[in-house]
Each structure stands twice: as structure tokens, then as C-alpha cells.
Length: 453
Image 1 (cartoon, helix red, strand yellow):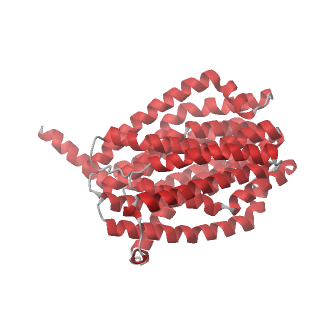
Image 2 (spheres, helix red, strand yellow; image 1 turned 30 degrees about the vertical axis):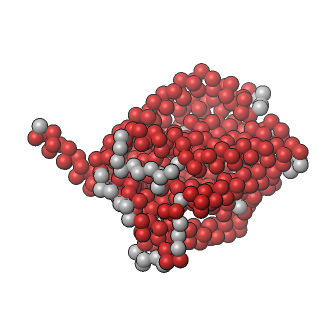
């Protein structure tokens, strides 16, 4: 079902789009959570540490794919908002061609340098082979991740966030079954968790493709649609690569941070990966509102309705701050219980370390909401470079932490690293948003209208 976000009540539209997107993000995280929980309970702390030591590489790979396809979708969404179906279809065709090309290049690069990445991450020797056996499968089947994310992003670009949700629910349930089958029955160990994730995601991609072919005639392409105007490919590349780079730079910073964490030993690795899995669930509304505003702002920017963009920014912040308040209260009461339940560990050091990370990070979610929403809104209204600059600052903050602060302060430096970088990056995107030509023009118009009254 397509959703035109250029007309109608803004809060209702944001919630209608964001709720399925939130649930989609939730079930996407279930892939990782299931792997973590089953690996931890069935294979023990050693295996959990192995998966955790490469979690940043997994996040980097998936975020590059997600950022690239969603960057391409911004252009699709703008043409959809402008009611320009011919250009929208050509943008979809270009998205398919460029996604295929970039996937081939990334797969080759990652496969060649994967072991070197693990060495750079200071992966402990005792878990090196287990970690490699897990991540090499994820990297080898990167095309599956791109396949699903490309089709889901096309559907979301035209306002359909419900269909990708339905198919993710199916594949997430399948992932649980396959995890248990491959690990508990077939005894494939950590590799079984990786194969389960890949196969389940492939199913969700196939279901999206069938749905588009049967239910979305406006998205059907003809041979002529693949003949792209000269200007379209650079537009798609600049949008796709900018958003992909934004996500990649953030996750390169996470990879750098992981190298510092890996040097603190298996117990800290296990604690951190567990806390991060919980944190990633908590952050999903941030990602949801970010994705919602990317589509909302793109459609309305394409339609020339900047007033609606501004109202969408304000209302999405209200929703994000409400969520932040709820999870802070829950976590400060139940942090130890949550960490213990996820890891299956009775190790008090692991539980206490994971709880410490959550309690330090959570109060700064109010800042994170600002960063996520404004960064994606800037992408949606055509500002490609400044969000990347903000993400680069985030990466540099993590590099500085690893180089100078982990040695004297240990895991405490890890806990404070991201909140500090969020504050710096939020200041950058706020300035970029306020100084954006269309926002400045809108602000002047609002002030003039008030003065006339």
C-alpha cells in the first residue's frame, strides 16, 4: 500500500509509517539477538565472545548495504512526491543496476581482507577461528542483505512500510527455527547461526520480490526504464554513496572501538556485545524516526512543501524523547536482570559490566534522537555532505578513545565515548539544519507572517 506523505495530518502519517518500520527494525534485530541468545545458552561464553568480537564487522557490512539502498531510495521518494512516475521508474532501474555493481565490489574486497580485519580488531587468539567461521559466511552472502534491503527500500520510498514488516516477521520466526536446527540438531556451531541468518533474510527478499511483481504495477519496469539519463546516475550515486558513507563511517568508528574492547578480554567482550544488543533495540525508535523522516522529508521536498518538513521534524522529536524516557526508567530498574537473561551467564563481572554500559549511555538518548532525525532530514532535503561530516567526527571520537583513553580508564572510556561524540555531532547537524537555504527561507517566512499578525 503506497502512502502519499505530502498531504494529510503529519503526526498520523509519521505514526502510520513509523510503526511498521519500527517493528521491521525490531525483527531485523531479532536476527542478531537470536544468534546471541542461542549461541550464549547453547555454546557458552567462549562462543558468545567470538560472535561479539566480529559484531562490529557485521554491523558495518549491513549498514553499508542499508545506507546505500536507502540513499538510492531518497531519489525515488522525491520523484514519487513530485508525481513524476517516469523518473521514479528510471531511478528504480538505476538502483537495481548500481546495487548489483557495488555489491560485487564490496564482496570481493571484504573476502580478500577479512582475516586482516580480524587481526586489526585485536581478536583474541583463543576465539579467532570461531569468529572467522561466523563472519566469513555473512560476508560471502552480502548479496542477500542487499537484495532484501533494496526491495524493502523501494517499497518504503513510496510509503509502504507494512509489507517489508510482514515478510520480516515470517523470516524472523524462520531464523529462530533454523538457529535451533543448525546449532542444536546439526551441531554446526557458530557457523550454523550465520547460515540461519542468511537463509532467513533471503526468504524475506524473495517474498518482497513476489509482492512487487503481483501487487505493485506502478513499480513494474520495462526495458526502456533501464536506459538512464546521464544526470541520473551521478544523482543516484551521490545520494546512495553519501548515505552509505554516513553509515559506514559511523560503523568504522564502531569497528575501531571494538578493537579496543577486544583488548580488554573475553569477559568484557561478552558483556559489551550483550549490552550493545540491548542498546540496539533501544535505539530502534531512533533509527525508525530517522528512516521515517528520510521518506517524509524526501516526498515533501520533492513536492516543494518545506513547512511540512519542519512540522515533521518537531513531531518526530516529541515521539523520540517520549521513548527515551520510558527505556531509561525500565533499564535503571532492571538492567542486571536484562543482561543476565540475554547472555545466559551467571558471571557477575559480565552482568555488572553490561549494566554499567547501559546506565551511562541511556541518559544521552535525548541527544541521539536529535542527531538521528536531523541527519536523515538533511539527506532527504538534498544536503549530502554535512551528515557525512558529522559521522566522520563520530568516527574520530572513537579513534581518539581507543588511542588515548582505554589504557588509563579501561571500559569506562568505552561507556562515555559515544555519548560525547553524539553531543559533538548533534551540534554540527543542528547548525547545518538551521543554515540550510530552504530552512532559512522558511524561518524568515514564518517570522514575517508572525510580524504581520
